[in-house]
Length: 246
Image 1 (cartoon, one colour):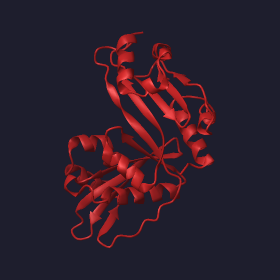
Image 2 (image 1 turned 180 degrees about the horizontal axis):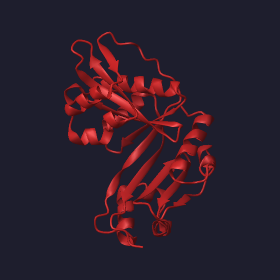
Image 3 (image 1 turned 120 degrees about the vertical axis):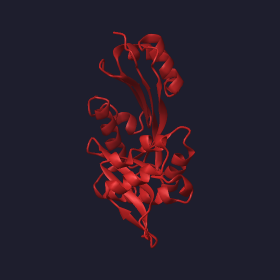
Image 4 (image 1 turned 90 degrees about the vertical axis):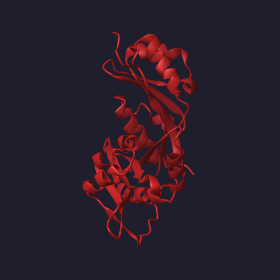
């Protein structure tokens, strides 16, 4: 399964804008052509971010970070440990830290979402906050469900108890960046996949490209992506700069 040409072009455009690059800078890589690493210099950045997208890559950060990265290959820069070392050795302070390695998945095919007879979907952020109260703090901070522009919470039909939730923010007017959260005791029952499918259907209806980010060690997030038919298209690795030296 592959992404349509138009979808790839939109993803490349969205990331180019998020990195402060010209709109066409990542286009060739998105179309499957081997392209050199793109450098996005931003001397005000508080982090260094390395993007792999289809057959290309881009590095965003201060000039000293871009210069220091010249001796590293893409496979090395995709590792959180490499970015942290680069920052600490060349420009960051001792409190520089990794911000994670994340796989990037996309979807451009509509899903067949069957209506559930035992649950209802709420669009009220208060239900999302109720769900968050029943989940571990780290999960809540990562997903940010109640703060999402478009939250969806799956409620038990009887009693309206929150079971799981998904939501998305709109990136650059083109991409729906998704995340999901499930009550710990109810995980591995397909609830996250179901409510995420509802959010995906809404995003596609709005003309957006669904994006799913999964931490490299988050098996559940990768499984959800695969279950829903997402296509793996790249990765994002980042490290905070900490006390910068100029």
